[in-house]
Amino acid sequence: MTAPDADGGEALLQACADLGADYIFSSAGSEWAPVWEALARRDEAGEAAPRYLDLAHETVAVGMATGYAAVTGRVQVVLLHAGAGLLQGANAVHGALLTGVPVVVCSGESTGYGDAAGRNPGSQWYRNLSIVGGPQGLAAPFTKWASAAADPGVLYDTVKRAGELAAQPPAGPVYVNTPVEILLGPWQRPPAAHPAPPPPRTVAADEDVEAAARLLAAAQRPVLAVESAGNDPGAFAALVELADLLAIAVVEPQSAVCTSFPRTHPLHQGGDLAALAADADLVVLLGCRAPWYPPGAKPGTAKVLVIDEVPHRPSMAYQVLTADHYVGGDAAATLRAIIARLRGLGQPADAGAVAARRQRLAAAHAAADAARQDAEQRAAGSPQAPVDPVAVAAALRHLLDADAAVVDETITHSRTIARHLMADAPGRYRYVQGGLGQGLGVALGTKLAMKGAGEAGGGMTVLTVGDGSWLYNPVLPGLMASAEHGLPLLVVIFNNGSYASMKNNHLRSYPDGAAARSGRFRGVDLSAQPDAGAVASAAGAAGITVRAAGQLMPALDKAITTVRGGQTAVVNVLLTR
Ligand SMILES: Cc1ncc(C[n+]2csc(CCOP(=O)(O)OP(=O)(O)O)c2C)c(N)n1
Ligand SMILES: [Mg+2]
Image 1 (cartoon, protein in one colour):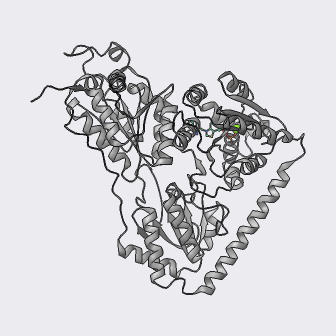
Image 2 (cartoon, rainbow, N blue to C red):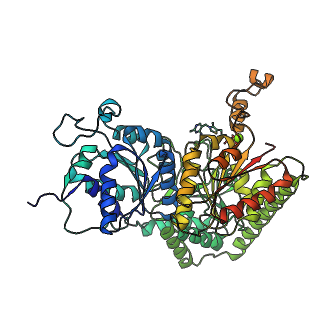
Image 3 (cartoon, helix red, strand yellow):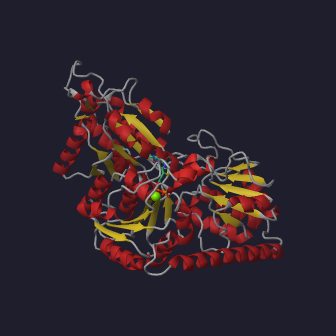
């Protein structure tokens, strides 16, 4: 046997390269010297390697990987530090699980604590960093799969397989514990690189496609709810074709994670599934985790057709879909197969009924659109008046170019933004999943996917964020990453000076309670927040505050020019509500 010619750092780097990871998103830790050394050796030799980004906070690192993987669909790698870094990044790893993106998260532990033979890992592992049972135990509840690489000889294939597992449906984050001794340990390079192929596609069975086509053909009042199919532009296009063919009402419920159907399309019926489902004879759930609430109270009596590669999400503790029929397979391929079958059945057979339905839905869409325009007129207000959130969302629709992407981390304003932004193309709008504080990282990763680190151009990425949510974000490390890696963002803070959602929540349970009587609410007041514009300016971004309606358009215009010039702009809009 030949003597090992490399170490675990090389093994991990080679696994990242063979997985096709474009980037390694890292927050520093002492286990990573072998990877840094491997990268430096490749620099010296002029060899290619996945691009490595040093980031100053775990939420930024994981959030960026999530945003990047959501846009590209390709597996990315995140290196964190020990159990500590994993815990710090855990909120964002959980967000990646809910978003359903393929990400490999690695962090280390020590197995020898300096007493075992071999290299000295450093005393911090003994003093500070051990997790009883191993850090994979921490990661298991919020990842798809979590394990440890127990020997340098298995490190490469463990990490590579982890990435392949992450990409298999349902895509999600996986975790590999890469102990410091394993990373420092000897590794024999394989004779040749062996890149991982893309994950296998699945197709629906012909019988299931046939059954779905017949259900759709027979329905008089079908409604389709969609949450995430638009992540695949092919599925977006196929859904438009299917809806057009039979004049199916399409709803993007509150649980929608991205744009899946054009808001401008006459068949788009908004975000309220309950009203339409109550009157429907067929409800189609296309990739839906949580289409209505409460979960057990499906509105109406319609049959439910679930089109989903993995209908029941293993990441959810409770989920009620009340399915009558399932069709599996990749969404785009399944939709195209259903369309082909419908055409084969001579659909639409009753062209008159379909035309009448199309007209009725178009009229409902037009009425909703007129109401939207009225709301925007009412929101405009006098130039001196405080700003209404509807006006901000409408202004963004007017000012943003067609290739701009909005990443949304607002709470009480999210429905307003979805309604008035009128996203009409795949990738135009994404809602940050899970706990607050990830939006800045996710937006940076989205921007990175649209242009590449240090490169010019790419569509503008906008982060819309509540004032409370902004305070949960690691703003300083995020703005540092923006400047360092050439990732300018337009950040728009929907600032109502409070956690308005917490007050709403309190009043739902205690409408006539003591807090309602006195007006003294806990968990609501943010009047002590620092000036977000000043903080941004101090961190190298442009900070702009909007206090009155008349300032809104000029401020956003100026901010957009700033972002086009390569600098992040934070527009803090003080709102009426
Ligand atoms: C990490 C995390 N901590 C706490 C919460 C609970 N939480 C949900 S919404 C919210 C307030 C958000 O405030 P803001 O962004 O200002 O939105 P608003 O409620 O004013 O619309 C809080 C604290 C959470 N979702 N995630
Ligand atoms: Mg708020």
